[in-house]
Length: 169
Image (cartoon, rainbow, N blue to C red; front, top):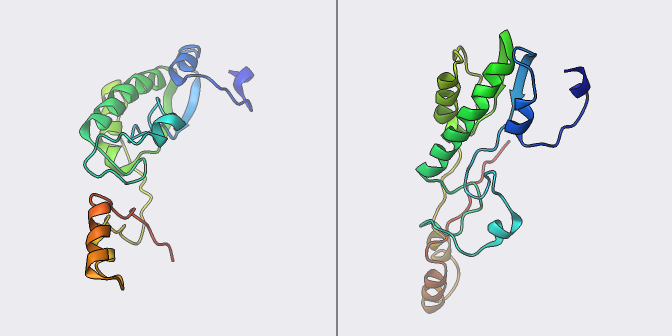
């Protein structure tokens, strides 16, 4: 283990973890990929720029769209990782993992299924709610434009939504 201390390891997680001895690690802290739209293990700049989007809300930034398959893929992958974590973690060791709120249940189920006991949960609690995406029609209809121009803009921007912006004070 000493050869890995203070080193940056660039490797696939499952490949690297398989090289570690069982019961050799005191603590695991991870912020895994969340498998959200275009933010999974197959992420590429080309895919993000692709105009082909398989979702009804077409113009939200990557990571804001969601379907259940993303959660299932995350669970399947995280179960494998958690099994390796369970193998290398010393008895009494700690395992901390960040998660997207919408995937927390999948993450904890994978950890539980791998053998971990879920004891506590630390929550990064925001004091303000995040506003929901709104149709651009709402804003277009309030513009100082002719009725014809508003109709043209509404037709052009059909399906577009505002991004979900969190305001910090």
